[in-house]
Image 1 (cartoon, rainbow, N blue to C red):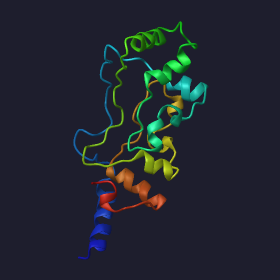
Image 2 (cartoon, rainbow, N blue to C red):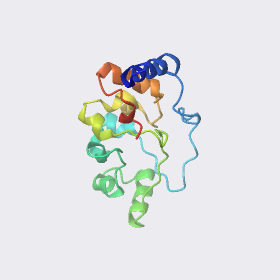
Image 3 (cartoon, helix red, strand yellow):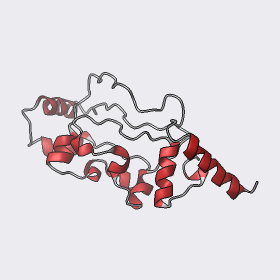
Image 4 (cartoon, rainbow, N blue to C red):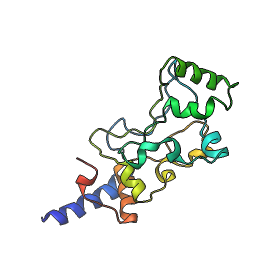
Length: 172
């Protein structure tokens, strides 16, 4: 069988039989959140992305140029919060971390297996809205995974957008 025929057959097989199967066992959406770390700061997207309509890329600045979206630095947060909402317990905790030159810990919500290559930069360049994969985060007080991020789910999107279906596009 020629490579292109095999490639089309594999994609069809994944779409038909594996659309709801996670990439690997243990990589489905998390069932329950892990308890927050001692230095975790609660972050409410309904305030920042919702009420104040801050765009995702205002805080997740690495997404434009990197495979990862990244998280904002405490310095970036304190750029506003040294003036705004200083009376809130979460901001007071953030200020203590800032003064101690420590970063808060965050629990990863979206996690792909190590054998999957995903680039936020490529998706932003292709004008894929963040909500396509992450849902309407502006309405989430606490971010949860809304998309299955399975191979079949990704391939369906790639087919609809006429993006690469070549295995090495996502598996390096």
